[in-house]
Amino acid sequence: MQAPGNCVFCRLIAGEIEVSVVHEDPRTVAFMDIQPLTPGHVLVAPRGHARFLADLDPDDGAQMIRVAQLATAALRHSGLRCEGVNLFLADGEAAGQDVFHVHMHVFPRFNGDGFGLRLPPDYRVRSRNELDVAASALREAWPVG
Image (cartoon, rainbow, N blue to C red; front, top):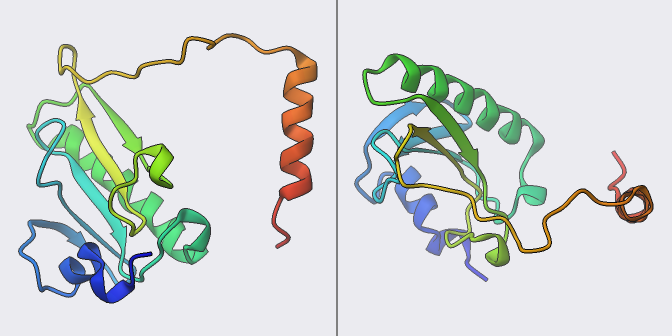
């Protein structure tokens, strides 16, 4: 488990690592991804360390969404090629998380950008029973509060 002191984003937010900042506020920092999917790819991260989304202070999470919304507007008006925008947050290794400090990717999309979503082989409309079983499992596990 990565301790906050060893977290690359914590060090970046603390100014120990060079970064191209787009926006800062008391709860979040938005900065350029060093390996962008497309030009203008921005990362939005909370200043406070949280390894996973469920660990994140709800006010930090709300501010991340607000900042992602502002980043989307900026992308559309920046002159960078932007015909659409994707938001992406990987939560856990199996989801593709490789930096264990919650962060959201905001990246501009355009036809022919080379990025795509690969759907699993069993992707299909599910039966109501299958959906109800999954919904029941989630209701049982739903956090209080």
